[in-house]
Image (tube, rainbow, N blue to C red; front, side, top):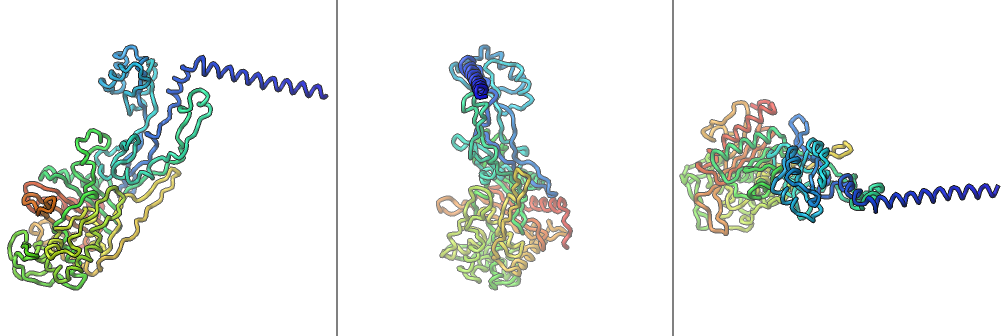
Length: 570
């Protein structure tokens, strides 16, 4: 019995020894005899996306009906690489490849000439159908490497809000727009590495290592409505053609929630080809990243503060002399004319600078300064876009009389368009500062979608004061703006124009031939669904924004009313 057990043990041990010997022999042939062959196969078959091409969540637009439309996605395909030492007939190989996918001739032949270089990439973003045609050629020294890249199906649409993925050092990251500000949510986290043990046997460790696929955070869903965005951009294109400003921009926002429905700037670019843009200045979102002296669109806020404080009412009058003196300097109306005894309603109708200064004098300079600060014109709004600029309102903090007078009609203080739109939204929603935001939800890989609550902003004006100013702005739009030609019979619209001088850098006064045009409005005035902000920097051929931006604004209001089927409010 014992002898039989010993025999079985010896047979079993012999079997394991034999298997081990076979494994060693196999390993010898794989690593030594056919090592170069297997390494070549490994490079072709086991190459994984490196961190530079890590998976990334998508970005979506949202239609008015709740449908998601892709704004930024990952596409998969191939890179083509060559081993120059193995390319014996470069001209033939070039012709073979170029028949199926465009190959840069100069790059190819320069790469093929680098004898001794083990690896040269010659083509990128090669689609699957082209790769399937190239693979059967079995060209010696040719490698197809799995690849993925960022693609923007809508091209220029909302490009300055979406941004793009580019290089930061040797890593690819979001460098502008939502791609940058939501980088941590969109990117697949490189928290660990996984190793394929079978691949490790047949090739080197580098080819066996792949990214941990469990770190992907999610996709982001924006409130940008693609049809509204396109209409806004077409409207801005018209402004650029007609008046040739340096830049122009616009925002369509829900004044109640702060949701950005459209945001666009001109000139624009296609993020798919960002590397062909002549100047990186086009990547910047001036609506968020720049500040401007906004001009007379500040007057409704000045008026609301005066009414809120009890310093004036819509029927309060003063004697307009055309010009006044503050701190030894003259402050005049844009038309340089005296209008006699006029009410606060006429101040808005005629956009009288002396009237805005009168309101500030009545409430007190320090009180006006407190209102400007409470409207947070000197702070960031916290919008979920990168590089937000901070408004410059220093002149109204312990300033001179001239500083307060100038600020009352939007000169001497500079504000970002998004901060101005936010403050003006308080007129539309009963006195609350909404929190502007572009992203409304995160969509996780497991199918769960989590909405983002931006929270409610502070109450900065009383509802009664904003109601009074709304009534005044509707009256101004219906009767005074371009002689009342833009009035819509069944829809009340509250709006105001703005024309501002542009300051000379370094405190040297103002240019006499450079201006900024601005325009804002909200509607339906008594229950606003939209607020629109437009601006044009240094437009040509027209002095006042009533001539450049009134009609574009009116066209946008009509489009939104029809597109959203808004019911009449009067």
